[in-house]
Length: 86
Image 1 (cartoon, rainbow, N blue to C red):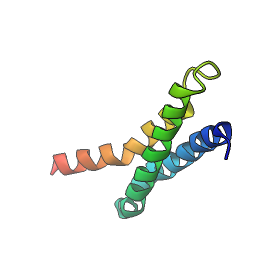
Image 2 (image 1 turned 30 degrees about the vertical axis):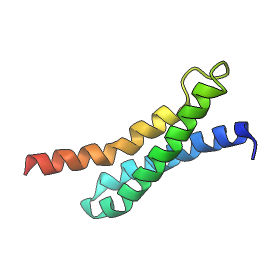
Image 3 (image 1 turned 135 degrees about the horizontal axis):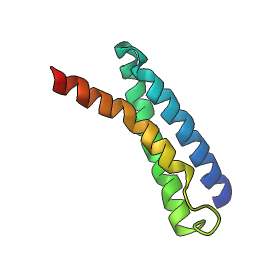
């Protein structure tokens, strides 16, 4: 697989996984599904950010992995908030 394909694919998939993970806080029962999506979103966002820093910095200043990482962190922060409130 070419690097540019991996770079673009990891960016878009990290956003999709981040959205699915962020929507998992809608009901507390969905957190069991959201946390594995979070982990996968973090990994793909990290790959996207690394590839941008190493190879594609001139093409795109802000990679899509940052948005994917932010969306993937929403359920983790929500869980920390819920645990802290109790």
